[in-house]
Image (cartoon, rainbow, N blue to C red; front, side, top):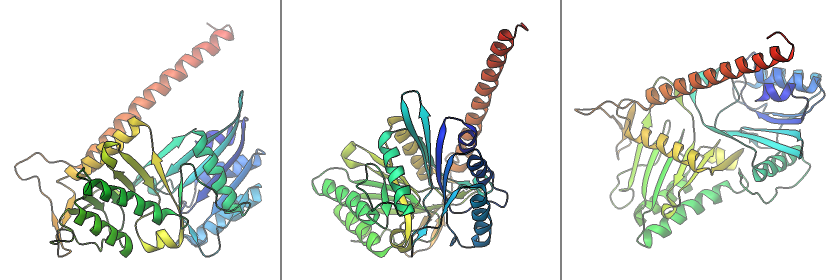
Length: 355
């Protein structure tokens, strides 16, 4: 995406956040090339990314030397959001393309981490992305968002509102249901809100890879909450949130865990997945994690974990299944690209009179 944008003569601007990048980052190389090609390139490089401070300073200097406008974030906040905005001149006007993700733009960790993201040309996402970078640049105040929710300016309240909605549905006799996947769950007010939802009858299924200070299965408090951690070949890094919403499911992705630092002290993004196909895909992925009986560890009410086992049933490894699906998708894509290249070569040779 960034490579193509860097070399596309119709692309006017590329804007991106960088939190952790590799020592020989192809993303940074593409951004530098885009700036050298005369495109407007704006990059927020987070210098306070733990263990990557020196690396990020080196890349920031390289980008500045290439002619990019390098930002260093908002005072007092660490920018942890993952977003790319590409502005392109189309025949019918200017079009904005946006990528939003849960993981870093790092070619090394991308081979080891499990993350999710979306690409969209939706105008409202495009307007929000432009407003987001204007805010980071200091050109504007926080806008009224169309699609995005930003921490620390509203994300906590958004989470409370989504949980409260499930509470209202459950109290009215409906099915309140939340499935949330994240790296860590430490925020006390959010945990209290989840306890409140459990008491109201909301079924809550949490997939938390790392630290979780919520305790499931406590009588009268969290009987409707389950917590599991998936440990396997890849590091689970995606943040996925599914709210049943009375049958009109709402699914979100985010760069943020439910921790005080993410909700209070970092610039994070939380965004909806709105196409029916992709909602179903994420629901299938979450259901697969919940069915995992190979790499799944179930938290007990005392905070200890018990490893899930297949027993007499069939083993279900969510990571193995997702890896196989990704391999099949990659092979199908490569076949399509080879066929496309073959056809384009045939057309070109025919025009040149060689066929």
